[in-house]
Structures are given as structure tokens and as C-alpha cells.
Length: 484
Ligand code: DHE
Image (cartoon, rainbow, N blue to C red):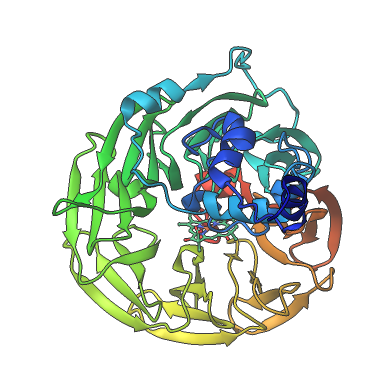
């Protein structure tokens, strides 16, 4: 017979199998900031749609995030608890959350201290301002495009993605986060106007030519949210095809057509929404297309198929397919730019899966050349005043390189690599095309300013993981060499 005292000693000696309880840990440590429903609060939503591309979630839980309210939990949670929590927050929600116009309207937060200035509060050219999105600590820096002085640096919602969109006069900018927040900022006053959560997970935004409608493309819920210029929700367009919801991959502004053009992720249709009355036109296509690039008159679009091996040209007036281009290696058409070459308009697109840039004749949609690069690239930039195209090598061992390519010969004339081993990507020209700004895309990063003619470095501005840069003039004039 075992005596009681010996029995307890035996129990204590046995290794205790303590199982992590991520739901309880979430409720105790995370819910107050990230929401009991994981849809966000003062902190971002913790759902796979938002976290999908985030690396090192375990390290963030253990050590926290510098310059944010996210503290570290390594002193309270074991590595096993943290691993279970990562599994918990990257598992899809059981029920499809509800986010209708009432919830959207209730999320609107206007800045009570905002007093609009009557003229810019700075001496710099307001149309040569360049915004730098700093993803390292979720801020935007406002740069004087002539002196490169930082005029303001403001906090954004978590994980800004895609290009901010400027009002047609260049005064206001709308910035979107993957969490569906749309922030409005007044460049003249250097102040936030307010923000609203248009959806729970969003892709990008577009603005109507009169600046009165902001369209937000959403994955969750599957929809397009239309806001007015004061961030009031006007309409939630549910993107359903034959009773099945489709995510909206992206929304594009087509100013000449006075419409928004929608790429649907899950249905073989393109939607066109009139900016005046928000009526929807549905264009059936053979297969879902994504990542659109438009002809300068916005009559034709070229989209990539799901397998990433061809480009399909659609005429938006009659809805018919005009051409198909063999473009293997995942063309990133959304990063395409155009220019005039030998009297013909060409477009160039990088490929996410192959170290080439495809140059396409936009008159007959033939392939002019595939320029071999040192690896797959993400972004391209040019400017009417510059003879060069700037193409990064975003992926692979040469991610530290930026190719400068002659627009006529289509040859690489120089490869810049000032920071060996570190990502050097995304460029943007100043208003007059005299300078180019490139991101050292690292947490202790920088924006490096080049003379666009001599290709010499002019200045380095320290920044926290700078990603995209956006010049007001180039954007509002729809400069051919930049994204729209
Ligand atoms: Fe982006 C723009 C989609 C991953 C940084 N990206 C866009 C746009 C789309 C898009 C549709 C155009 C929006 C606009 O400007 O209106 N991006 C996608 C994807 O589908 C993809 C491949 C996967 C995803 O998770 O969404 C993707 N994008 C990324 C990244 O991993 C990048 C490098 C880092 C990040 O911040 O997420 C990234 N995307 C950017 C940037 C732009 C962008 C900086 C704006 C480019 C510009 O110059 O206009």
C-alpha cells in the first residue's frame, strides 16, 4: 500500500503536462487592445487576413513592438504558450463578422483639434510634397520636395498598404490600412482630419475625379465601401456574383470614364461603378483577373490571370477581350508604367516570379523586349523629364540593387547598391523629375535622394522601414511614370 505522503511526492515528481490555453491567454493579455472578437481596438485586428504577411508574430508577442503600445509577454507566457497564441490569432474566425454601414459610421473619429489653415503653413511648394510611408513604426513623413526637409511626421493606422490617394487639388490625402481604416490628412495644415473604419480587411482605395467619393476595396466583408470626402459612409456595395460573395482584389480610379473599376478575386467579372450615381456595370470575363494596368485613356485594361502566366487585355467600352499576352513568371502589372519610345507608347511591368521586365507595345499589345534583371522586382518608376526607368530587385540575393534602365535602348545603364545585403526598393521622382527618392527598406532605414540626371547620391534621410513614396504633383497629374 502506498502511504499518502509518498503518493504526493510521486505526483510532484511526475512531469506535469501543462497544455497551453491560447483562448484564455488571448482573453487575459490581448483582448483589451485587440478586441474580444479579434477585430481590433486600440491595437490592430488579429485575424489571418491582416496577419497573413507578417513574419515573426511570436517575437512580437514575446518582446513587444518598439514605439508602439504593444508590450512584450515573455515574462508571463512560455514559448509554448506563445506558439499556441500565434496559432490562435492566425486561425480564421469561426463566424463571418458583421461590418455594415452602422458599424462603419460608428467608427468615424474626427480630430476635434483640427482647424483648417487658409493657406499652407509652410513655405515649400505644396504640389511638390512627397509622402513617405514608414512601415517600421506606422508613420508618414511629409517631405519638402525641393529641400527634402521633413515638415511633419504623423502616426497612421497599423499596416498602411497601397498608394495614398490625393484630392484633385493636392491638399488632402487619404491613407488606408490593411485593417480597413481610412485616414484623412490635411497637407496645408499638417494635421489629421479624422479616420473611419471602412471594413475589417481592405486592399486599397481610389478617389473620384471631383474628389467627392472615396472607394475602398475590401476582402472582409466582401464589398466596396463608398465614403464622401468628409469620411461619411455613403454606400456599402456587396460584391456578390450569383449569390456568392467575392473579395475585391483592388479598386482603380478611371478619371476619364468617371468610374471606379473593380478587380474581383473570386468571380470571372470586372465591375465598373459610376462615380456620379454609384450604379454598377458588370462585365463578364473568361476567368478572374487581377492586378490591372490601364491604357492612358482608360479605355483598355490589362490584367493578370490567376496562374500568373498571361496578361489579358479587355476593352472596357464593349467588354470584349482584345488580346492575350504570354507573360509567365507572375507579371506585376499594377506596378507598370508607360512612356513614348520611337513614337509609340510602351508599358513595362516587373515580374514577381522572374528576373525580367517585360516591355509591351500598347498599340498592338506585342512584346517588345524582356529585359533581364538580377532578380524579380516589385516596383518601377519613371518621369516624362527623365530618360531612365528605375527598377528594383525586390526578391532574392540581389534585393540590395536598383537598376537604372535607358527608356530607348532598354538596356541597364547603371546598378546602384549602396547598402550591401539590405533591401533597396521603390522609387519616386520629384515634381520636375530632377531627383529620385529610393527606400532603404529596413527598420533602421533611410530615404536616399539621387540626382536623376547624374545618378549621384544627394542626401540620406533616416527613416523607419520606409516603403512607398508619393509625390503630390506626379499623382494628381497622373504622370505616366508613376502608379495611379
Ligand atoms: Fe502591395 C500597392 C496588392 C504585397 C507594398 N499592392 C498595391 C496595390 C495592390 C497591391 C492592389 C495597388 C494599390 C493602390 O495603390 O491603389 N500587395 C498586393 C498584393 O496582392 C500582395 C502581393 C499580397 C498582399 O498581401 O496584399 C501585396 N505590397 C505587398 C507587400 O508585401 C509590400 C511589399 C509590403 C507591404 O506594405 O505590405 C507591398 N503595395 C505595396 C506598396 C504599394 C502597393 C508600397 C504602393 C505602390 C505605389 O508606388 O503606388
